Image 1: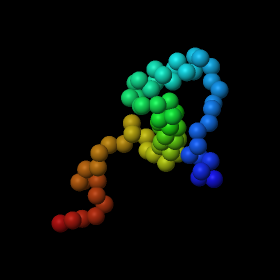
Image 2: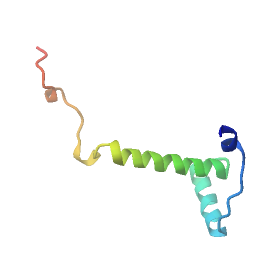
Image 3: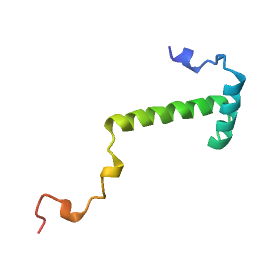
Length: 73
């Protein structure tokens, strides 16, 4: 199974998609289309995980010492 994942394959995409991927490749500073697609997959995975397990940063604030529930005196 691992060997199948390390081999190359051909994916048929439109010329417009290739153009968009090339522009994205330049903006992400990746050296290949494979790295560009991998970066997109990793970013999407991170977004999904953040949505599921993350917090709403607009509703949170930095922890302050007075937020402690225990008395440290």
